[in-house]
Image 1 (cartoon, rainbow, N blue to C red):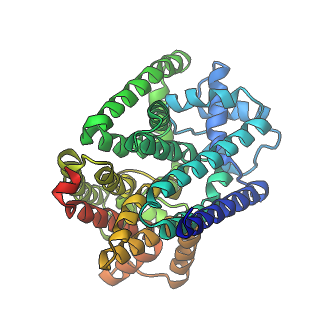
Image 2: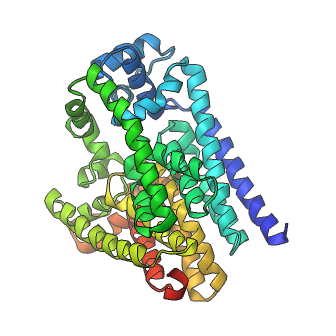
Length: 432
């Protein structure tokens, strides 16, 4: 192995090791350990017991009866008893829900850790053909701040990593069946995480379109028993799920992208574009419209490039580099979902290999995106905002508030625009 590849691989391994050490340390000491996995686990246990998996009272009864150390924190209890996952996610969680909690959560942690390490290595392997050290350093930096995935056990740790693995298999045309199944499972867990990645493959045509259609078929086949089972046990599940998403007052502050959530001072913040737009336009209809217009323009340009010019693996990696940050901006997401930004690394590495100002810009954009969608830098920004108390009565105060209290939305928009511009600059001969 050439020396640059060795150095890049060492940086990657250091990032994986840091992720594992910090994640395990946090999970064994924090009071809210694996709280997001508890949401999945106990709602699926309800389904197995023929109880309503979206009814808070029935989930609470199962949770208090089965958990050896139920939390006394009211907010955490509200989170655990108000699932927001689709029935398809519950179906995939059945193998874990059949096991006792102790073994189930350890296997879930192992799944998150293993799939993230594999996804990171596969992305590095593609990127190392162009810039092995830069790729190893940037990916290692992103991984080092992924401990929250093991602490909370959020399904994004599975959905996002399976999406990345599936995309790699399909773009690189290796292990096609594994790629289709991984991407299908990702869509079943969190369709809003892998949706644009799937759409990129569909628009690209050729083998990518065929694999995308196969993925859709696999997801549809798995969805049928999940929906039938849930409807039989809980005929009103859809209304209950909607209430859990938007109707419960406990989640209003945490899930609202508007100004109200500024008071939560939580680094695990909402990172969609609405979160930044709401600082300038507090009315929900206005900031929703502004976000829709901006994201709509970016989506149209991205779709045109992907449909007309993403005919090679290299061009498709550029399309995925836009899809990753754009996915975060379009709809409700949090920092753990932003690990999808690993998909920006191959395009960044290709630009690095060409050298010049564009190479440095690619590194800086990726560095900012990886840092400011991670928990550490978001916590620093939130604390600075709390200490500075920037006002929102003037344009300058609103701009400072966005940069300090909502930095993830800003860097995601920057990454989406930068990689879209890089896409449109690609020579036709390279992309056709």
